[in-house]
Amino acid sequence: MRTIKSWFWPGVITTALLTALAGWFLAGPVDQKLTDEVNAALESQNPWASADVDGRDLILKGIAPSEEAQAAALKIAGETPGVRVVENDTTLLPLADPFSFVITKSDDGILLSGNVPYGDSRARILAAAESAMPGIEILDEMAVARGAPQGFFDLASFALAQAAQLTNGEVEIAGETYSISGTAANSADYEAINAALRLALPGNGKPGEVKLAAPASTSSN
Image (cartoon, rainbow, N blue to C red; front, side, top):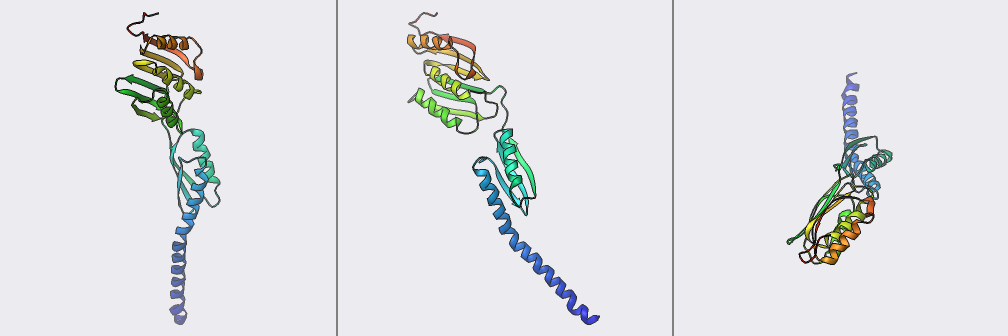
């Protein structure tokens, strides 16, 4: 028995150590492969999300633009072959209620503030502002949020076009309510702004407060 013990236990210990070392060396490549697979699957439709993998346990991270996007990313992560458990470490963008968008025009330029939806909406709004008011300095203080009403971009584009017809003032969208105040640049712009406000507003907009002043040479309606 002494002879058996003298070679048996060292052999068992050696085998266990080799097995542990093999697992340790292989874990890194396996983890990385699974991480790459999940992130590649997320990239096409959910670029806001990313994944870290430890063994076969996955941690999903990122700020989701909507509950639907969050659920879709979790589904992708959970259905990736090799993933055992998905820990949801994602959060949602803040919900703005009402979702607001404000254009302030002054001698210093244009200030865009309030909220902007996730995605390419910021770039689209900035491009529309530059097109409506070329050569005017534009300051972007918009914050990304959830809760944009249907037709938001159409109403925002309309607001930018009307802001271009002011010398100074403010145009605000709060939910679907559209308000404007300030001084028209000239009599033609004064008439054009008022005429547009008498029609149905784009993007399901609803008329709010209107405080529009005519230029000094024009009588008020």
